[in-house]
Length: 249
Image 1: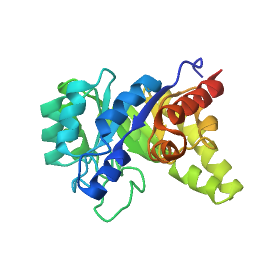
Image 2 (image 1 turned 90 degrees about the horizontal axis):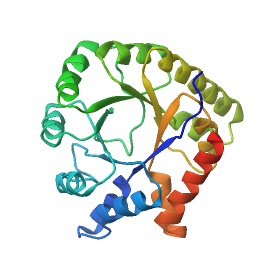
Image 3 (image 1 turned 45 degrees about the horizontal axis):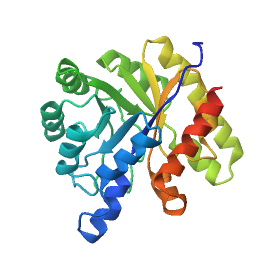
Image 4 (image 1 turned 90 degrees about the vertical axis):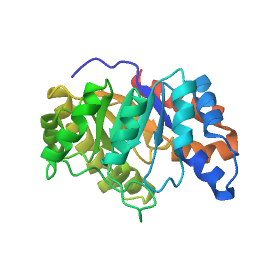
């Protein structure tokens, strides 16, 4: 077990763009949200450019690359189009995620073990371009081992099943999912992978995950954008930052 260090917070701004696109105008501006997030203590900004451009657009990525002073984590499907865009912009990090047009949000981790050869060839140019490559996966040893074999530097553990079980009051499943993530965080770290986590985390669920000593970064978006409706984006992020820091203390 490594010593507990400062846990980084990546703020996902996708759903600021969702609200903007609902009216087809320019407001609210995801770039403004990114700037507020920086000021509130975010260590990075995450944006997912989907195939159907349902929220983040190509112009958003252009603007973020030009204006951000913190790293951009570019979430993307493993497609030729997204690879070309990533190689053009060369963001600090790319996170490879599964993507289906009909899903409301990313529903699970990437199936790496069954697609190792293609994914290894897919991420190689990204690594050569200087991007930190992360793979979004379930807390499953097969997927972690496969991510390591293909040359990923980072894994991001999908925390959705844990958060869903908590919301549904299924405490046995919640605790089992949390223990699985605890074990897989340690396992991934033992292989030399940097460990991140995210999806569905809230004020109520963040601290047990933030306390895992191997986890170096949490990526949180939908909850923070929703909470911003009630308390404002800056206070919403600062409260998440406080809870994360408290869990690491």
